[in-house]
Length: 412
Ligand code: PLP
Image (cartoon, rainbow, N blue to C red):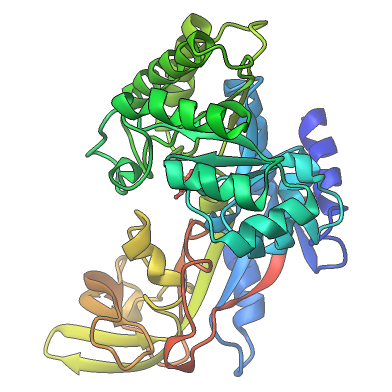
């Protein structure tokens, strides 16, 4: 795929990636990641670590461009702020959704992203962070309260606003962000007026349909609600709005194509091409989830009758925090295929509980998960663990967030 290999070359030269150890793998070589992990896991001192598959990000970006042509992603840094991830996204042409000063700093530190490619997409910002955005020229932010209008006026009066609206209720979403953010329909006009009276420019409308949703109709409803807000602004005599930000919530599975189709249809109806509105988005999970694999080491075990208990060196206060904050369902697999004694076809497995390393009893990764007999020093592999994992973990009990040991790309 010529375009794919050009994209990959760009990614390999990206800040955050260049100079790192990158190993080549063949497309469709399913065992390549396991092989790599095995080679890293070989040393006694090695603790839990991630492998970052740059090639997966390139593939997802191509898929995004095919399905949502014209909708520029502004990668949601909160999902995984790993510099190589940010560099790869920048090289592919993405903008960035930042939620705080530190996230803006991380993106600008790449040295290749213009402040104009950043949306400060947190509707309620600390004043000091907003002043920093003013200093570095990040001039687009979201709001959904009158207080925030006054704050922006005080701290960053040249900042343009995106009115964050609440889309349809979405109890299906793992995290329904509408319970915390977004103007209700009856609040739209007062909030537009508030910005107008403050002399701030409302550049457009933003929404987020909720994290980890498999419902695609919510995008339709939210785009329709955005159209209503655009029309309300025109009726108030405000300068024409020019940005529609359709947020995140995309998953890299089969639901993506359905969501993209629903969005395409709704945009054609309410914001047809050539209408002067730029459509942007804030995907996080879609790009990060599949690109990271975690390997964690068994550091202890207990046998209780037929049940097994294992302790590993990462847990819910570390990378596996995504089991709480995201929709990650851990299905750890042993790194090395077990060899059944006596040549039987199938190896015996046991209902196993896997604990994280902290002293908290809630630090439990899986319960009743079938695993072969493991011993201290063996490795468990967690696939597709790039979203809200490293970024939401902590160093609780002194266990540091696992490092990224290597980066993968396709051999060209
Ligand atoms: N934008 C905003 C404002 C968010 O709050 C989030 C997630 O919480 C995202 C984007 C990224 O969402 P996702 O990872 O579901 O695509």
